[in-house]
Each structure stands twice: as C-alpha cells, then as structure tokens.
Image (cartoon, rainbow, N blue to C red; front, side, top):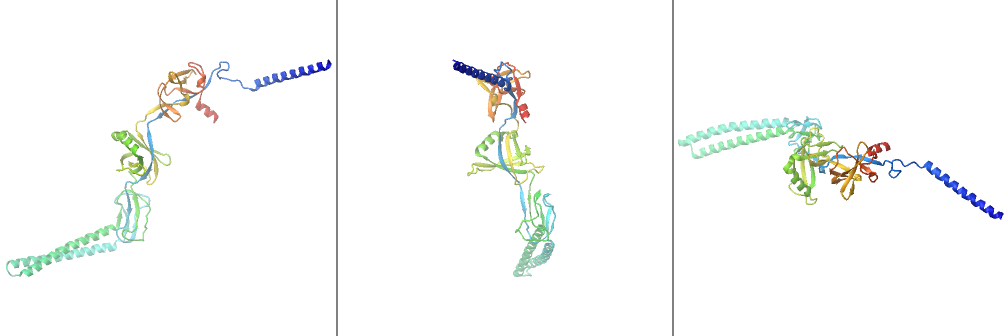
Length: 388
C-alpha cells in the first residue's frame, strides 16, 4: 500500500513540474515577443502601409545609335615642287584659316626661273616685231611685183613662227609663276591643323610625302547606321515635320548636346551585308567638343516632350470593375481610385486617367486597407533613407 502511495506522489510532483515549466514558458514568451503594433488583425489596429509618390516622365520614343564623328572636309598638304623647307609658319594643333601660308619651300631658283622665262618672252616678242615688219614689207613689195612669191612665203613663215614662240614663252612664264606659287603652301580650307610632319631644313619632293593634315571642325559630321525599317519610320515621321525632330549627342564623358543639328542626309543605297543604311548628320561645334574620330551616342526623337504619370506596378490591383489603386491623403485616409492605364515602361505603367502628380499610392500592404480607412503610411524614400 505504501509503495502505491509513493508512486502517486511521484506522478503528482512530475505533473506539477510540467505545469510550472509551461507557465514559465508562456511568461517568457510574453516578455520576449514584441507586440504587433499597427498590423491588421491585431485587435483591429491601424494598418501599416508603404506609399510612393508618382513619377512624371517624358515617354516620347527615342532611338539610340552609335555615331562616328568625322570631318566634312579634310586635306593632306602635299608639296608640288622640290626643295628644302625654309619656314614652318603655323603652331601645331592650332586653328588655321583658308589662305594662311603654312610652309615655304626655298624660292630662289623658282624666282630665277620666272626671271629667265620673262626674258625669253621679251626676246620672243622682239623677234615677233621684227618678223612682222619683214612680212609686211615683203607683202607690199610682192604686190608691186618687186619681190618673188618665195620670198614672201619665207617672211610669212618667219612671222608665224615668231608668234608661236611668243605664245610658248608666255606659257613657260605662266608655268614658272605657278611653280613659284607652289613654294608657298597655303591652307585650302579653314580648320584645325595637326602635327608638322616635315620641319625646317628638310628636303621635300613633289607629291611624295605629306607635310601636315587639316580637318574641318565646325560644322562637323556624325555618321551612323540605321536599319532599313528605322529609316522608313524616320522618313514617314519626321521628313514632313523636320521641325519636330530633336537629336541629342551623348559624349564619352556624359555631356549631352541638344539640337545642334544643321542638316542630314542618307546614303543612296542600303548595305546588303548588314541591311542598314548610313546617315550623315551635320552639327555645329562652336565649343569644339566633337573631335573627329570619336564615337558618340546619338538619340533621335520628337522635340516636344510627352509627359506622363507613371505608377509602380506594385500599386496596381484589379477587380470585376477594372483596375484601381489606393491613395493616401494628408490625413492618412485611404481612398480607392479607378485608373485607366497605358503602356508598361520598366517596372511602372503609364496612367492615362484617374490620378494626379500630387497623389501618393500604396505599394505595400494594399490587401490590408479598405476604402476610407485610416492607415499608418510611410513613404518608401523615407524608409530607404533610414536604412542607409
């Protein structure tokens, strides 16, 4: 009998121990677990939601292409006469104007050749005067039958040869003057000149080596290729409304040049290998930011912006009546708004009707709130700032 009583006491003690452990566990759980504040279903508290401002963005379609900057005009300066370079009259890398003298090749022998040809011309002209007089004299005597026909023919031949000699002497003088002019190498175009490839004292020969290179920098050209489909679309959209076209050039450092376009033209045939056609656009370059040989991004689109409201797709909901969002006003009251939607752009969608730029929409916790309910709203940007 005592053994049975002992077993009952042990069982009772164990039951009491487990009950105490459970009570302590519930107590500690209540002490350690944070209270659910502001969550739906926790005693009917105010729902906690995240809200976000609407974005206003230009949604006008723009196409981006890779463009290559190239000069409209470029010239390699070549010597036309032989001789030693006497002077280099420009600063390397500077801007030169059309007609500026850049190089002088030794001139003495070309000056002397001009003087020689001038003397030859004067001698030929003097001989022409003499032979002309002889021809006229023989012609007069022949009419009076004092001179033979053979003598007259000889005088006429000498006169004609003298006239030809004068013409030849004039041509030789002109050539000598041209060669003398070539000893001064002038800039045929205005532009930026590069390095002097030949310096003073070096011997140059006709058309065998470059002296320097000049490239036109203002205006300047950007060449890029588009697909045949894009070309047709551009012609249909912009050729009849050229004033509506806007181009943006994005330089390698991020600088954007807007609407510096002067003119453009397309190549006369499609490249059959790539199914693209080359387009050449001419731009002003007053600040010399466009350098021949560089690559740039060129964006083409409409000049007038098409501003639209964009709503995050996380804020959109749908029921049997259509699409809607929930906005929160300054008093923290939720309001359901029916919206008309447009195109999807990234993770957002265009709102055609139903919202204004001042509205703030619920992007998280949408399922917790009802129309007209008071909510505890927090801007997404504020939360991000707190996390950072």
